[in-house]
Length: 358
Image (cartoon, rainbow, N blue to C red):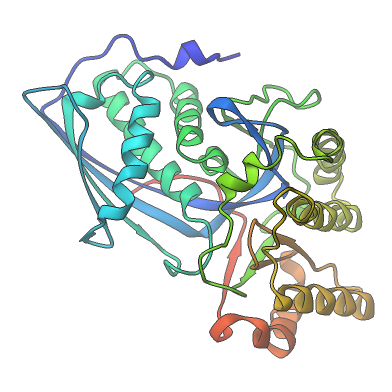
């Protein structure tokens, strides 16, 4: 079992210059992570579907520099300098320097873009940090070719977590567990691990993301996580997450979609219930979020088509369904749900396989 100390790079060479390019997808949690301890350690384990189409593509160019007393990088977003994102990268480098002590030896040009609309309200920090972590691991592999593939991916997930907690679930696919759980072999608070016992019913599972509100959230996820510290229901919630993960593990293996729906929708509503019952309290759902949820329930009841929803920490709705009902569900979305989306926008996605080298 890899420990934090195992991720400290000790022996490596140097190179004059190199360039790498990786894409990493977004992910959607089924059992939610909400509440964290120091150093980006989750208060409870979570499990997510890795997505396929919503991704960040990041190119990294590295050049050896003469002095090595500070971090040096340029950041481009969609080809243009992006100054307001630089402090986040600076903070990320500071957090990971202990594990990648070679960072100050190079100047980095980070050129990044998303395949989804920038202001869509889809979390780009997970895909963005995962893509950057993969590139940094490519640099480490270039200066230390002896590292194994397993170590490469585990450390990439470990580094991504230090940039944005859920980013550690965007390295691999199709289903990833992050956080210690008694029943999942190799599970860790330090990095995400692939969950491979997936029934055919969940292969190519679809996720259509309804863009209800594309504005900035009134309360950031970072603040939301912190509000779990003195939350009246925190301990019960953390226990519940362990219980739900045990259940969904069995469900993903057995292919029971009806039970899958119960856990996934309950988790989504519980996440938002935690926000509404924290102090200060806040609501990230919008009226249209609730309209969509009610429409999905009505449609499922009337047609028996196994479509369900989940939510992130925001107003957008992820509509989840098996591939074999895709036509019916997309027709339903067109007929009944598009009107609740901002500018009628939605994104069709599905389960994917994680980060890819370009």
